[in-house]
Structure formats: structure tokens, C-alpha cells
Image 1 (cartoon, rainbow, N blue to C red):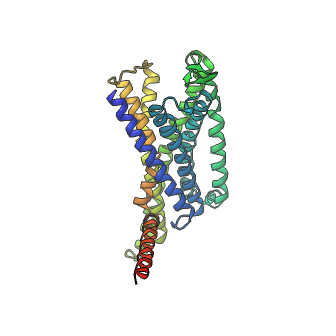
Image 2 (spheres, rainbow, N blue to C red):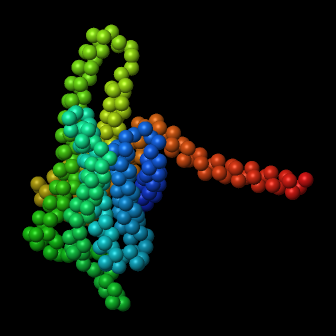
Length: 331
């Protein structure tokens, strides 16, 4: 019971953190003062929005509310079934937007001829729209896997998987397909694209260094390499964090699928502990991108500081105004 309560508390913290940091990221990025291209900004805003939706639907509505308020209206079967669809859809969209962003940066760095046509704001908008629609369509069937636990006052309550979900060949195939699409294929796609990008970067850096050595300008800054370095740091920070936080769930699913390990609900069993840990790390991934922007992007850091100072300045100005008004009245 202690472990379950502790996990519920951590989930509540993640929910609040995810909502705060992603909302801040969306506001700051939409201002367009972070020195990023419109294409990159559009991807980052879309990723922050999907992470925000994950933080609202999964740790807050599905876990926190259901744990602390088991008899709330959110536990009516159609409502919680809809929320389950939103949880899986927003998670899938968040994951595949990370893949789309990784591919966009791969094209920008490794495909010079395709770069001018693909790495545009219009293409980014189309890709984001397509990923969002497909992510929602892929998870709509999940609504029909839910059955109520009981009926009270003619209202179905509770969300439980239908027994056929575990026995029907069609539903088993659907679940396996979903697990492969999120996160197994994205996990390996991101690894592959990063490896190819690193190889290209190393080769290009050697060529540029050789050319600059021949021109005897070793001490001059190279603007092209500096811009590329910033883009690479942002890319590898986002994708590296994604890989680290999703690795446990991906490996755990592959292991249990191969070994056919049965479900063990005991709080002290390795299955339960690993399952909870992988879910916790997955939820944590919805909070990390904003922290990455703060660490890697100086202009974003400056905008964040201004955003934090703004309410403090407003309060200070209000207090000073009240103070001067009081003094005038006393005089």
C-alpha cells in the first residue's frame, strides 16, 4: 500500500510539473524570440502541446483523480474510456513528433539537396497535422475495449478491459501493433537517425577543419559550424533523453513478449516494480524538453527569466503605487 501511495504522489507531482513547464514552453516559443527557425519552433511547440496533453490526461485525469476521487464523474465509463483514448493518442503523437523532429534535423544536416524543400514551416505543419490525425485514428478502437465495472442509477461506472481483449486474436494483434508502433519502432528509428547524423557530422567536420587549416584561419570562428553545433546539441539532448526514459518500457515489453511472462500484481514483485518504473519514466519524459531548452538555448533561458520576473515586477509596481497613494493621503 505504501508503494502505491508513494507512486500516486509522484504521479501528482509529475502532472503539476508537466502542466507548468510545457505551458511555459508553448508561450515562450510562440513569441518567436528564441533564435530558432520557424520550422524548428513549430516542431517544438507541437511537441510541448502533445506533452501537455499527456500530462493532463494520463497522470492527472487518469491516475491522480481516480486514485484520490474514485467516485468522481470522470469514472463514468464513457468518460474514462474517452480519456483512455486521449491518453494513448497523445502519447503516440508525442512519440512520433519526436521521430519527425529527428528526421527533420537529419535531413537538414545530411541531405543538402532535400533540405531547402523539406525543412520548411509548411512541411512541418503538414507533418505535425498528419502525425496528430494518425495518432488519434490509431487509438480510437481502444474505446471499444472498455467495459464498466458496475451500473448504478442507470449509469455505467469504472473502466475495465473486456475479457475478449486478452483472448480475441484481433484485439491481441491490435495491442501488439500498438506496442510496436509506440515505442519500439520510434525507439530504433531515433537511434538509427542519430547514428547516421553523427557519422555525417564527423565527416563534415573533418573536411571543414582541413579546409580552414589550409587557409591558416584556425583561430577564426566558423559561423556554419557554430549554428550546426547548437542544432546538434538541441537534437541530441531531446532524442537522448527520449531514448533513456523510454528504454525501460521498450526493453521490458520485448522481454515479456519473448518470455511470455505472466502478470504479477504483487507490489513487491519484479514485474510490478519494473512496470511502475517504466510508466513513471515514460511520464517523466513529458516534462524534460523544457528543461533541455533552458540548459541548451541561451535565448530561451533569457525569455524564461523575463517570464518569471514579469509577475514580480507587476507586484512590485502595484505595491509602489499603493505606497505612494497612501503617502499622498497621509500628507
